Image (cartoon, rainbow, N blue to C red; front, top):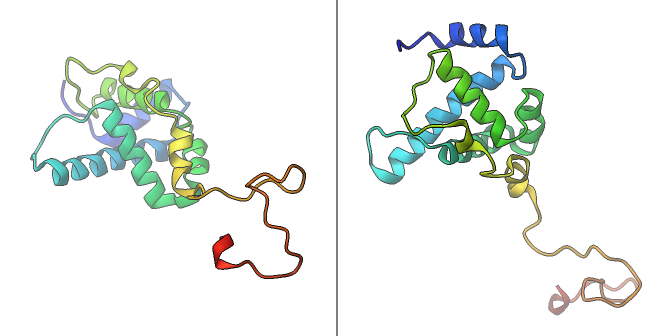
Length: 156
């Protein structure tokens, strides 16, 4: 199949499938480029096929880099909520002639690989246990009782 100009492919896709926004498709193409560049650095391979899980990792990496803590909101605004959505978009682009595929490629390559939302939030989660509980049982998560005294370095 002959490769089709990317914007023409997107217009053809949107006639049949309005679940995903144009900006989402452009971001997906950028994520594929980002993934290929990262793989080239790691493996010193000029050109090779990108697997579904590798592309999902690239989507997360680029989204966090570009959008920071707003990555979940931005991707969701484009209709991208889980790995399955990325797979559907990839196969929409394949069917429209904008992306190529190998014989082994399947939409199921993107199913259940990762919780996209959770992976996008990982960089923004606390890196140590937070003192979350207040009062009650004297748990180790409770702050030390000391009135208005500043914390001692041994208590931190």
